[in-house]
Image 1: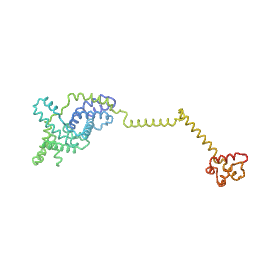
Image 2: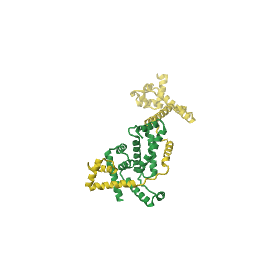
Image 3: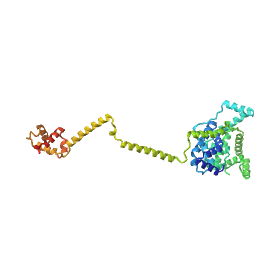
Length: 181
Length: 210
């Protein structure tokens, strides 16, 4: 969505058109959910925070000046609320045995392949979880959201050079973690 | 290209986000540096592993139901700040209301008259207070300064033979006090009792004393 389109929706919402807000939610709900989910492994927690992100946007859109794009603005809210939650709680993703069995049974792959992939996925999550906050958010936005460094710099209010360094160190740390596992 | 730039460029190299010229430069450096090769290997391992991971599970219809659930939460919580009623205006309004209420309470308090309360107990107390007040006022009038009491006392003290006018004890008291040394009625009244003062005043009011 281009910027004028976003601004029109925001203006409409500020003029009392609730449908404009709904449009923004429909367009960004998945992206926001996945940003949050990459940082907070539990679905229920991620869902709660995703809703909080949009509620925060609902409350604050009247103060949105349009200096940055809407997605930069709302990504920033998502990152900040996720980090707040991480600080509040120490997340350790846990799979129950029932969940594992259900996932294996519902897959077309061989059970051993599913288990191996699950194991790898869990290792990656553990490695990401151990990253320092700044490296973690840079990694999520760069790798999973595939955002250009320039956009990430706007979201996180930092320099492109610093972001590249953070991303490199994040990748390297994940690699070291995986080698040692 | 310094070390930091080279490290950052390695990721661009793996992602394929560099120019041909930069690619050639990095490959040349890689041939010369086993350490750089090790770092490249690590980066490739990570991206390879990331590519093989399975996506997290999301409940069915989660995204379909997201907006209705969000709207329900917004409506129930009334979480939206009114557009034309910003925070500063809300604070201003709240403080204004508090001020108005406080002023109204003060005005009501000041216009409230206890006499209006008609309870029997209050009336009784009020009557008692009025009686007491009248008594005090009377006494004040009786012994008010410059009423001539000092002058009368001097006459009594000087006219020691006037046994009919004053009682002998009063005359003696006044002689002991040496009233001629007093400068004002008030000064004398502070040294004699109420009874003596009344007697002195009685003498003052008698025709024979003037």
